[in-house]
Image 1 (cartoon, rainbow, N blue to C red):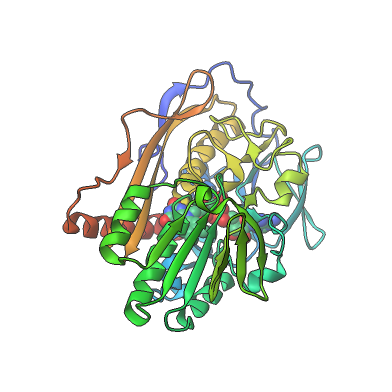
Image 2 (cartoon, rainbow, N blue to C red):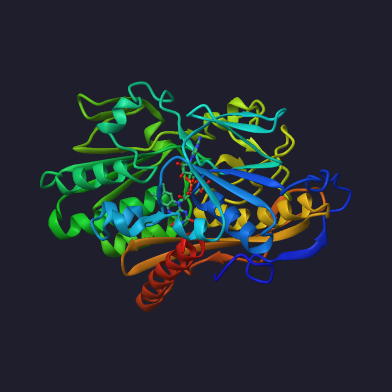
Amino acid sequence: MTGFTRRETLALSTTVVSGMLLAAPALAQGRAKVVIVGGGFGGAAVARTLTQIDPDIEVTLVTEAAAFTTCPFSNLVIAGELPIQSITFQYDALVAAGVRLVVGRATAIDPAARTVRMDDGTALSYDRLVLSPGIQMKYDAVPGYSKAMEEVMPHAWKAGPQTLLLRDQLAALPQGGTVLISVPNNPYRCPPGPYERASLMAHALSKTNPTAKIIILDAKDSFSKQSLFMQGWEALYPGMITYVPFSENGGILNVDGGQMSITTAFETFNGDVINFIPPQSAPHLALDAGLGGDGEWCAVDQATFESSFVPGVHVLGDAAIVGDMPKSGFSAAVQGGVCAHVLSAMLNGRAPERGTLLNTCYSLLSPGYGISIAGVYRVTEDGHLKSVEGAGGTSPIDATTEFRAKEADHARSWYSNLTTVLFG
Ligand SMILES: Cc1cc2nc3c(=O)[nH]c(=O)nc-3n(C[C@H](O)[C@H](O)[C@H](O)COP(=O)(O)OP(=O)(O)OC[C@H]3O[C@@H](n4cnc5c(N)ncnc54)[C@H](O)[C@@H]3O)c2cc1C
């Protein structure tokens, strides 16, 4: 991928969204204002693309921290293969491209006044608001877990200090010790992520702690790229990783940080390290503004990302349910590119075009062994973003070692290209 301009990978098809009610063209006086909350994959893609295609729009990017640490490749940090600095990016290139950066936490949205309130009491006004704020953990979903407990049983499902905590715990695992990984039910951020994590933990342990065990307690009975993962585990780490699906654990009843245990309907599991990944939802900021309706994720028009409940607000990335697309960084970035074209059209009084979107999820089973799944998505006549049949696909099960090594190289190229496009 080289950029999010009209002609490239995620170029919009020429199909015009018919019958759509357009917002009034950009304000008669002054530049139209787009405020974007969230400086991760989705938000950075909107900001980057808008500055490229429509410099007349005033783009403000609101982000909690002055730098962004990516979840993609954070499993390599946990495995001790990369320093965290190599997955941490500044916003200088976006600022140089004309984006106004506001570092702070957005605390509330007032859709009637078209303002976003910030934690320092200021308010930002917008003509169109984009939210790509990612996820929040449902800390109270399982008895015994809590925000405080993440320091004992880290989730590391937002990259940063949690990543480093889990890395350090893994490095200190006693010889022959046990790592428990608990995985929530769908939907959650990065469906194959927990299984990539188990693989890269096994890669690290196989060098320093070869009798260690990893047990995955899943809240479901199957997972993305399962046969490819299991084949790889057998080849690379025989006997080290045990997968316990929902049908064999019956669901988690509670966790105990003092005992370092997880109790399921059928058995209590003890771990020297427990990577507890809680269920997730869209962040409070979005749900409190009514963007989730009665649900926990934001419902949107799948062609324009405009909220189904709150006009003028577009939601994308992990916080939204966007048709068949999985919650991935690549999905969020592609949606952000398309959303920027939609915003430019709406603010200039044109009908937005429909995008053809794509996603590839690479997973590393070791630094030299990659697998992938890809999909192509298009909005159907009835307004749903659906997988295009026959497009995309999964890595072959009978691939050679060279093929797996090439996929690992492709994963590194993908990461490097995407982060360069977004963050410079
Ligand atoms: C271990 C792991 C591995 C992964 N690997 C991959 C992979 O290989 N490929 C892939 O495509 N995806 C991967 N993902 C998924 C990917 O990280 C997410 O899908 C992606 O980050 C979603 O983008 P987003 O824009 O929705 O949210 P994010 O990228 O999380 O960005 C949200 C940003 O908004 C900020 N924010 C939130 N609320 C506020 C607020 N109120 N005010 C100001 N700022 C706010 C947050 O701090 C954050 O910076 C992985 C995830 C995990 C956990």
